Image (cartoon, rainbow, N blue to C red; front, side, top):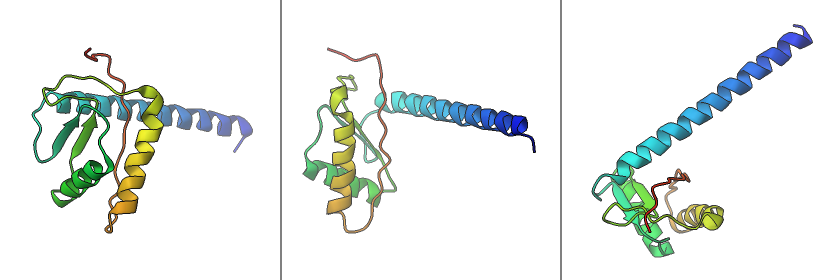
Length: 122
C-alpha cells in the first residue's frame, strides 16, 4: 500500500471518528433536553446544586438497583435549568466517579457527561 493511500485512509478514519463523536454528543444533548422536560421519577433525579457525597451514593445505588437512571445536576425540580459553574466540571466529574468507586462495594461504573445548554434560567 502506498504512503498516499495510507494518509487518505487515516484522513477518512479521522473524519468518521469525528462525525461519530459529533453525532454521539448531539444525540446525548437531545436526550438530556428530553429528560429535563420530564418529571422526576425512580430513574430520573434533578439536583439544583452539586449534591453531597451521601446523596451521590444513595442515588447511584438506587439507580443500580433499578436498572439505571439519570442524575442531572444544574436543574431544579420544576425543570428550570440553573446550570453549574463550568470551571468546576472536571472536579465534579472526578468527585462523582471517585465517590461511587470508593463507597460502593459492588462496582458501579457511572457514565458522566457534561453538556452546555444555552437556556439557562436566572
